[in-house]
Amino acid sequence: MYQTIHKTALCAAISLCLSPAVLASDAKTLDPVQVTATRVERPLDEALASVTVISRADIEASQAPDLLDLLGRQVGVDIARTGGPGSGSAVFLRGGNSNHSLVLVDGIRVTSTGQGVFDFAHLPLEQIERIEIVRGPRAAFWGSDAIGGVIHVFTRDPSQASVRLLAGSYGRAGASAGAGFGDQDSGIGITAGYQRLGGFSATNPRSTFSYDPDDDGYRNRNLSVRGRAALGSQRLAFSAISTDADVEFDRGTTQARNTSAGVTLGGELRPGWSHLLTLGHAREDLDTASSFSNQFQSRRTSMDWLNSLDTGTDASLSFGLNWQRENGASQNVFNGALFDQQRTSKAAFLAWGGRLGAHVLDVSARHDDSDQYGAATSGNAGWGWSFSDRARLRLSWGEGFRAPNFNELFYPDTGFGFAGNPGLRPESSRTWEGGLEFEPATGQRLGLSVYRSQARDLIAFAAPLTNNAININRAELEGVELEYRFQRDGWTAGGNLAWQDAVDAGTGNALLRRAKRKAHVDLGYRFAGGMELALDGDHVSARPDFGANLDAYSLVHLRLALPLGPAWRLEARLENLTNRDYAMVSGYNTPGRSGVLSLVWNDKR
Image (cartoon, rainbow, N blue to C red; front, side, top):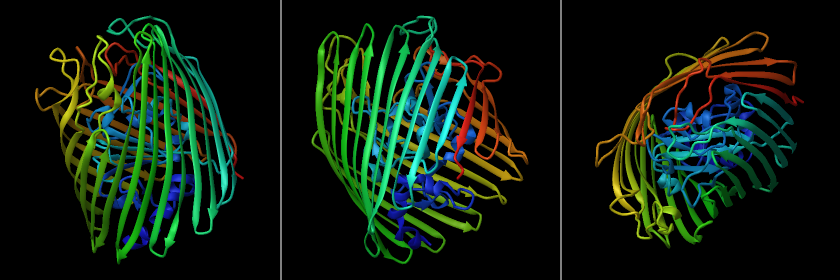
């Protein structure tokens, strides 16, 4: 089976990345697959890493208000938001820093060269077909940033026309539409959307930044285009997505423009040898208007060539080359130009995977070489054992690293706050993980993961000793994750629990804004007429923050989906039913009881 999977691994990966609607269109009959953990397609139940796959059907069933809310429901993911939709946010995988997660959109790296993070707040769910979350280090496959894991977003390839209209609390209103034309070999799809919110005040009197009790609104305009064509044995494809957002915050506004685009060519070069060549570009432009007005531009251009060779029965060899150029520039109203820098890196990786009876093995290594931070070599190894038809044990070890971002390297000493340090070394980590997957009965799935990570050379600003960034900190991260899923006779139930201990190894203090305990539960029923009713809830334990402790909280949400005919559907969701007052970041507000009503049309022809 392993050889059969890998014989067309990259061809299937091309289909998944560039036409995910094809694979997702028959989710009831096709086993879930993933391509992010090892960069080639593999059934989800054979992955040797902890992987969560969120399909388009899952997204629609959740009725999540935005991408950050959806990510926050997943095991091992912590979210911190500074206000309402569109406001600044942080995503932590397994207790790591927010810049310890590699973020990809259609295979293109989109993290900012300045801060080293991606703002998920501006990527609408209506533009997303699928999300893969890999927890644990993946530097041996992807290079820098993949210390805590990888979050890979696949944009929609609308094979059918669709329209969504919505309205809700806090002055929320929006519309989106998509249409696609073509056949299995060639076609083009376009999705466009607009959303606005009157919002609520981002801060409260406890804020140390600023407080202005006005409503902080948000507007988002977004457009994506995808195309594909068959060229003999090769497939040529193109994808691009652009978002333009206006964010109000107390005493200021920010305009955030993000664009990513990629062109791929892939297929079989000869029997048993498949390849995928990707050219990508991502850019971010931030323009903040306030008493501290500043601008930042991020540019990232890349070329990636991935190959897969069959090496014998139930085994394959993958190898690839990568080239990347990063540019970053920043300026503000007081100092003018702060920095304008670029760096270039090259990388090569090699991976072997095979099946030996009931055992599956993976070994991989990657070498990155940058003209700015030097060289880094990363390794990864995994073993899995299916000791019965319903149970599997897995063990893995991996390394990760993160190159310093341009702010940490080059931000000048302006006399206010931090300053960069061109002599910084990359951060690094090592992780051990064990896992057990078990199917207690038909329609049920249980997963358990245990991990321990050690990170060193973490970059911090060590005031009052110095305002410059230095490699000083170490962190120890360990945890247990439990997942369960049940589906039978119209009922669906699921949930996840995570216990984690993320501490500064030097001081023993818990890392900020990471919950020691976090849980999500979901229970739903589909009636004979097609109506769906579901209840879901979240619990987050107490967390430390800057100068404060954040209280634990629990939230309950209710949702309804009602078919109005073969093509129409009415959706309703009530958030925070108990109107719980809670905080994700000290001094910043969160929404109270609120609701959203959506009217959806999907062309079923």
